[in-house]
Image 1: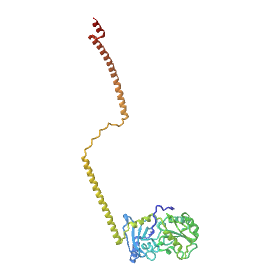
Image 2 (image 1 turned 180 degrees about the vertical axis):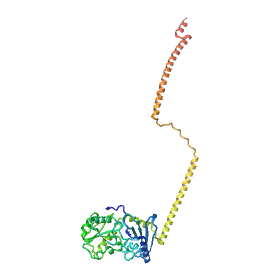
Image 3 (image 1 turned 90 degrees about the vertical axis):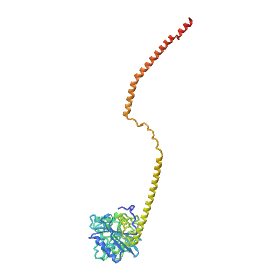
Length: 409
């Protein structure tokens, strides 16, 4: 069992929550008749049956009354479609008051379901939602088999909507002691407590079954099972009672332990948090004053939205004007000259490099003979020119030897 409550919100002190299962036919009609009867008697101010959200198969009822004559209470009961192997329809009931809940106030369950004196109360609505065979308003004897007992208590402890109490009979009680303790509890606790009763000879077996939960029931006493997840400040010794007298008298110590348990900060079950959110966000049973306040909030919201749209329009207009001015200024500026294109600087491929290499080799092979011929022609021309110059000098008599002879003669 998990003892961490990090991911769970804390249960508000203004909240009363219960969860059960109705095993009879037409639970919707039974709730309608009960609410109508309480409205006629003045127990509730009004009730309604708003449409279920998202066209689901849920059936929702809302009721409003004033606890203690002054404290407004809003309650919402939801009937869940049948699911699983358990017979009947699950119901979830959350009620929120304007101030912390008082256990002396009437139980919200008795304003939606018939209780006791009504002819329609056949006991079909007070079954435990997840564990078969458990009832809220009756004594639930523990199984004789130790393993079955352990399984039942473990499964019951996982249900955090209600409080589970294990009571051990020190001796076989009389007729008054065999009555359920729920009838002796305050109205605000009556339909949130499940009583498990252990026979005198089951003390060792029940404590063996409770070993995994970390608690122990005293002989002739009682203990409150820790929910899953358990409160951080939960201590099994603070929530155990040494003596519970099964003689029809009020169990004072047990009531004190229950009140201490329900008053401490406890993790709110996830489905209970969803039910509370539906109560707060989708509440439809409004008074005239609440409708007026709701309309005023809508008007204020629409005014804020209109103001935001006006500001957005002005900003858009300003941005459009700036864009047009920038476009006009851009058109007056001459177009800049295009930059000169640079040669392709991409690296040559290996094939291109090989082609260029063969081309250089070919040009080199073709150019070498021509260069040699050019060199030979230049040398020959130089020699011929030199000889011709010598002959011309001799013919003109400008040679060294000819000039000397003429001057001598």
